[in-house]
Amino acid sequence: MTFVNRSDTTLDLYWLDFQGSRRLYQHLISGARAKQDTFIGHYWLLATPDGVCVGIFKAAPQSLAFF
Image (cartoon, rainbow, N blue to C red; front, side):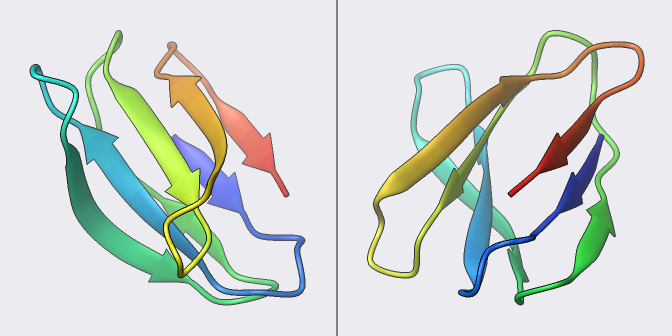
């Protein structure tokens, strides 16, 4: 999956494990782009630094998320 942070703040990228818990993978600063290896069907969550969810994404064969 590719994530592009178009917001004006850093966002935290989490993988949601099989129990629904957040597993931090990386921080995306404003304007950053990150490619994340994953498996089809896995869920990813973007949150503000204080933990507020701004989006949840399910991995597909080709995914692109803009914020």
